[in-house]
Figure 1 (tube, helix red, strand yellow):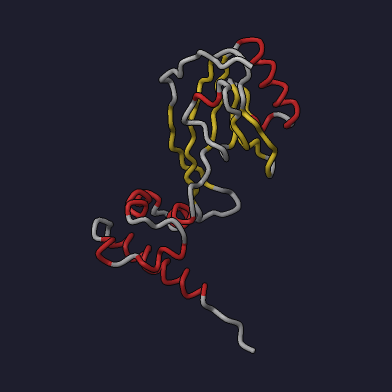
Figure 2 (cartoon, rainbow, N blue to C red):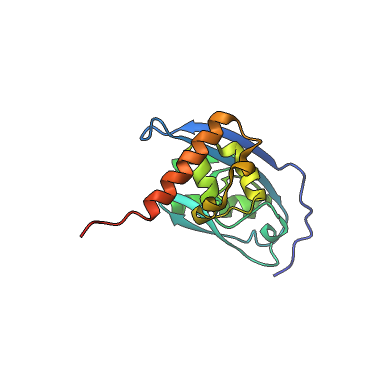
Length: 183
């Protein structure tokens, strides 16, 4: 297998869109998408699997075109390839479309949804305070358990209403962790 001599183009874009789930009226999901234009020769090198009706990146082969693109991560969900949306295809047929497009043109554009990073991002998404994720990341919070170490002084740069929402949600999480059934 020959290593590709392609150079990553600077055409990657990131969009942030808000979509409202029909099954959870009051719950907003933030969906972060990224578009990557792959170009080169040889093996594309992305391994996919069908997970809960989604096409998910489960591996990236070394010494392939995909391995040269640092934005590509395991866990990303495929939304679209070129102009074709995944939801309009059967998984096996979509795999054939990707293979034929890559073989014929040596270039292909994927739109991916980025996976949720950790418990803290999920927590902030659920209470509609996702814009504070970087603050929690700087504080070193990565799991629900880390939330018990968040102090009032850590939240000084957050609006008063959001601070109350975050603090009450943290109390709720930790009180539910220690709830025990009566004998």
